[in-house]
Amino acid sequence: MSFELSQRLQALPPYLFRELDRMRDEVKAKGVDIIDLGVGDPDRPTPTHIIAALDEAAQNPANHQYPAYSGLNAFRDTVAAWYAKRHGVKLTPATEVCSLIGSKEGIAHFPLAFVNPGDVVLVPEPAYPVYHSGTLFCGGVSHFMPLYEKNGFLPDYKSISDDVLEEAKIIWVNYPNNPTGATAARDFYEELVEWAKKWEIIIASDAAYSEMTFDGQPHPSILEVPGAKDVAVEFHSLSKTYNMTGWRIAWAAGGEQFIKGLGLVKSNVDSGIFQAVQVAGMAALEGDQEPVRAMGRLYGERRAALVKGLEAAGLKVFPSKATFYVWVKLPEGLSSSEFASRLLHEAGIVATPGNGFGPSGEGYARFALVEETGRLNEAAARLAELKF
Image (cartoon, rainbow, N blue to C red; front, side):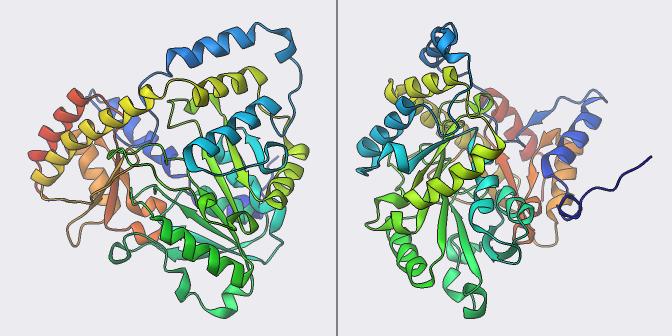
């Protein structure tokens, strides 16, 4: 007996990293020494003081029962204090912060709160695939905003036609950006907030990489803009900042109506984050931030090592002040998939083809700085032997 998948699942594009894993494992099985720079998963362990906080909290029976879906009051208080210190933003923890089981979960669920079948969601591309899949799951229609090199990989949302904007409910933005590494200045957010108020469109800002900077300069939050909470919600994560991808802890912060809507969805589909993990998250945000700064310096060192080989191979590398990604432009006539396949089979290096993030990513590739500097020097040497 066979049952057909739902139309919403059939409409999804193939999940990019599943195919990358298949190709990598196939080549690895042949004995090739693989340097995997595909998936953006930090390779260094979580700082020890965070692990210690989890260990202590896990011993407390009070943390063994169902947590609140919206998060521990103490965790939300900590998030609000972090925003006040980091961005000068005042938040009411009980109504303007919601804990998430990783930002991916919140990003996927948020459209369910505000998008009806047929409504338009403005989705950047190339981009994190969940902006589009979350739209599809609630019956929305993605209107894609290409991110072009000529625009600094910022969306040209002002060129979208009025008839599309009248049907739009949400616009997704993501800076520092995955996959391009581009950043956005505060004036970008100021103009976006003004525009969103005019069209009554919710801004959903994915700020997962805001703390991963090379130049020591903090990246702005959209919530710094006066009046932003009227139209904006920001998704933030501890995953990349504190090497906690497996811990699944994040938050959404912003206007009360947006947090309430997301909370209503979550109360029906999940039971919140293990409270001991939230205690560990508090330790991350409140504790010594030197491990974060040290990782920023390390990623800068790793980036320099890899870029040396990429440029020697004749590839154009885009400058970046943030994220742990390197975005590369390929020579004319070489497709993203062909490049990734050749790189894997000829050099044993895994990179992500840019078109996997959307059609505007064709002709580009992304490398994640998730190997030690010595391995990246080896990758650079292998790249230098190739000519594109």
